[in-house]
Length: 382
Image (cartoon, rainbow, N blue to C red):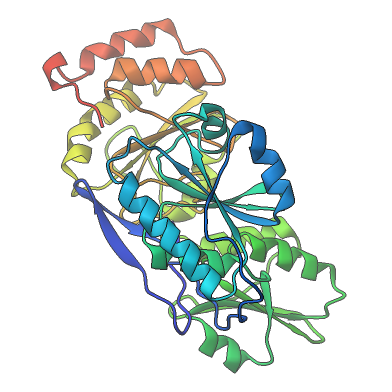
């Protein structure tokens, strides 16, 4: 999960303690300038059901939808914060619509847009389509910053390098003719990272794309395509340990910079454990995970991997994000959307999960691996 972007007048990143695990939360980009209110807008959230969901999105260009569970003990307080966020965004002239979906009643919508949870979850919709912007922000100030960071053009016109450097602590500065096909690529890529990096542009001759951030300065020298530029931006945003040295154990070590190569592959199903070395739950689970890796190492289409989620991010937080440790993802070969494992973390249950979601059958003899699992009284669930 990329670290947050700061501009003058915005907040800064902070950490929230979840159970026994500390996870970074994004404090998104706040606008430098806000237009005055153009008229009185609605101050209420619209309740959406399956029958009204699509039409509401079609009628409103930008919508922030709160997928919530009324059984959540914090729901009343969260609801008040969200209502405050609506009032505050209206006060600065933002006309983005706010809506909410009760996931206990609208299970179909919850499964379609937030199949792995958790709830509550905020999702940004634009042009009636879901985007990769999913957040669990619950304080009014965080939500306002998030909304205003997205309610703008993805590319900001800049007059000079000095202006760009003064405007944000992390920015991309592109300089080339606007008639270039690369301008469209820049717009597409910028629209994917609006709350984490400020993308600026100057219409000039020549070709230059630079990354401005302390300790990460660099120039883009890749192909002039959307995919290549997006990969470069994601790598710049991704926190990563150095490439690992060979270590004991059968699970493959993943770091931020090798995430795409190892996890997002088309030839193998991938089991990925995201853990934190200081987390007691993680330390308890690691032996079971290594046992799983050992007993499945002969399965050519299955890879068992692990990543220190405290020192590494996913370059694709819209698909791989976590709020507690340990978190187990399963990604079938050729897919981009993982399935999150829930349940007692035993080898037998992990194998059953792989059989249910995998692209190929697992050998029946692997069931013998359950003998290496912790004793029954040690079974546990998060």
